[in-house]
Image (cartoon, rainbow, N blue to C red; front, side, top):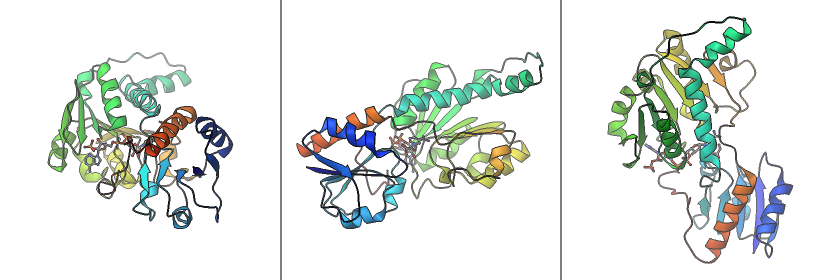
Length: 306
Ligand code: NAP
Ligand code: GLV
């Protein structure tokens, strides 16, 4: 069995060593144009040339959860696309979102600036019941985040394409229930995949439907958010602030207004990192299962786009 590794922005050696340790009989190497045919590719944002030159690939295993970069390419119909299925990401995402939520609702951002000014000022506690949290996307990551937030006794709502039943979470679904979901939400967390249906979903119309003093936590993709609409709604006071991990252009360009906005916190696409050993173990297990002709989790449904 031959496996080619083609991941941009990733140091290849530790991945090649880890994959080789898990699949000792396989011939595993870094992809180069003109390589002989491989059975599987391990990928992150590969060039179109990989699929043009390797039409026989049985599967391309993505070392991330989001497959928007892969779906922008022409992939042969016979090549399965397989995404990472958690592999240690959901607990990181739960940490990030709970941090952002609690930093905002306990006003730790205010205390940080007060401390810098040497000011001792206590503030009246805010009620959790005044900060219903709405999570867009109740998949592998969104469901875990919803449960983590519910542990802190915030009211929690979730929205997905198909109906869900998650204890402690008011689950809504489908386009017809989006407006009702937004109207009941004050802290909006985005964990949708980027698809033609979800691109620009965070816009003036949807964000305006949130409760006044809304807070946005975008941890999915930058292209979900219409950036100028967020800036305009921060200006009017409808939105109180945002913590943003993903951007239309990454790295966020120097001089972008988000860098210096007093009510926006920027992090560098780091809310749920690919953890190498967990991911290698999952990919090795999936390749072994595919070789045995067994089904694997995380196969991308091309019609849905995720
Ligand atoms: P997932 O398991 O595929 O879950 C996606 C969820 O979104 C599902 O609940 C799905 O509904 C829902 N959904 C999709 N399209 C919808 C639509 N048109 N209307 C309503 N709901 C819709 O994905 P995941 O593993 O949770 O990951 C979500 C995204 O997080 C990834 O695609 C990626 O972009 C992002 N991500 C970001 C980072 C980071 O570091 N910032 C890290 C990892 C992932 P159904 O359940 O009904 O299918
Ligand atoms: C990261 O953004 C991922 O999709 O895994």
